[in-house]
Image (tube, rainbow over all chains, first blue to last red; front, top):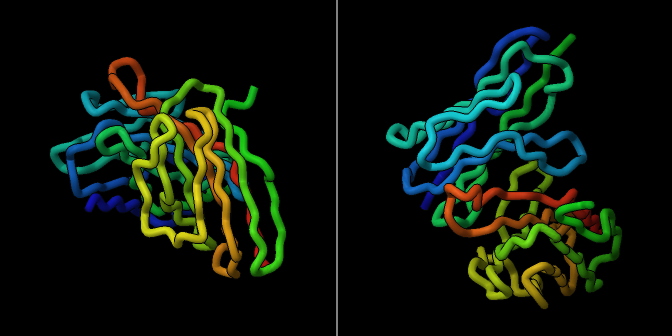
Length: 111
Length: 117
């Protein structure tokens, strides 16, 4: 069974720092990997989608990479801002179905 | 226009009652999901339907019965509610198919917070 692990579980950084969130998985037979953010009491907002054939995707200050051989994806956030404070979740789509979420990394960016 | 909409957003009810949560997507997706997010914020899949057919049922008590009248709707009915059913329930959708065409992007509704007293 596919297992998804996100490290660290929680992270607190001062504003302006660059940071990396990790997502590791046990089965490389994935279709896509998607990163979301969830704000307290809110739904999930899609940040980046990396297709299985790709190695990275970029959107603004965010860059996500995918290394299927090592079973890892990283989400890099440049020049963090207080507005980045949220929980970040990764999900794998196996055989097209979105089954496996990580438990998330709770990020706090302090002014 | 909201892509994936769930109603109600909040639901407070007594133990033993029966309640339903509705979900509709206007993205033309062929696959819909129900997820449960517990108090520890862990998202766990409950059901998935593809073109109105149940394809995933993850060890959910049979008090939970999903219904998909068409591929744009996936409703969740819960019988005999228990305290442990209190959670946020998220509906989501995706389109299976060629990943090069941008398929398999998962889109979520805003969630329905169920509180059982």
